[in-house]
Length: 493
Ligand code: SF4
Image 1 (cartoon, helix red, strand yellow):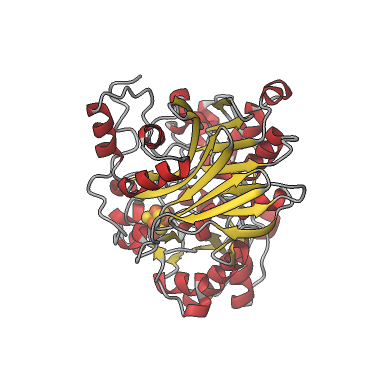
Image 2 (tube, rainbow, N blue to C red):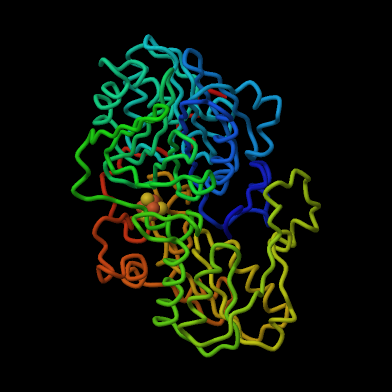
């Protein structure tokens, strides 16, 4: 389902039967760039964000500093729709940050779009955030008790105001003093008058890398694919707990917080979120996904004639499964990659056809065949059933569904919107029940051991250093205080 899914057909459509998406939602992408010459700074930010579009399709924004002023443009929509030549022309300067948004805290409303820009006693400050704080509710209450007025309902505003009020000589000092109060996932970029600063939480939940631009300056991004797009060299991961400052031709790094003794890289980045050409923790995402497919074939082989992916994120895993199982790999589902841009209300008849708006089956490759369908995850279970039916209607004689991660039984509180525990199909049903509900001949999930073996082959599948809480319920920190996505909406509408 990668890179421009899950179907996100504007929020009002999400409530319509047949168009509701089964997948977890992307969780935001952040980007920052600083050059000594300032040439084309907004374009650099635009193309960085363009490469991170898969991490959020609700809204996009860029903030640029020219050394004394920060200008910001942000709006609802895809990167290519939000920015026009006219808006780009206003974004001149030397230092820029950008954001692609999917809302994990707060509604998809303009007041929550990022970057957040505020005036502080130290000059302007703009902040963009990927992640989710589990103690945002308590921090919000503290700000309100101190007399702050809040205009938004996302945890990013809380981070921004805490930084604005912090004491310290430099922005790096103020950030370092504030960090210990934040619990949860945050890969942050900030732009102030004379620099861009990037920060990653000490658990390392979300990816973040920095690289040198070919014509001077540096860029930082959620994923290496954005740095590759700009031709960056010397790409390196921003370490958990690290503050990285980009200031024209200079890059400085400061280990502000000791990395957690229990680091928690999100394994779902490998399974689903990250672009396959990105590299994280020294691992190419495409290769990891191929190994996920190979492990699936080893664990859950079945007599079949053809292996097909649910495009796009499952394509590498289907190749891996096919290779390990010795079964032909072919396309069986063709995806309409533009459905995310649909603004036209479908008719009732079309709505009832459900996934047909998004997928069509290639009956020429399916008729009379026993099919293995590879998918990356089964979250609410609303898409798998219609896909199985689509394959049967196209002539498949058997449909065996194979999922490249373990059953998802617990909600994520670290920046991935999977809904509540009660929304999750695997939290309510056994595997056999799920098989019957989606109408498959068989259903199998990759084991946790198998998934980790694909991610960490050199360490024999060690779980050390990773978060697997949505499969195991073992959260890397207490989540009792974690707030539902829309819990701060109450007073603001
Ligand atoms: S709970 Fe799941 S989705 Fe969330 S950070 Fe952990 S592994 Fe990733």
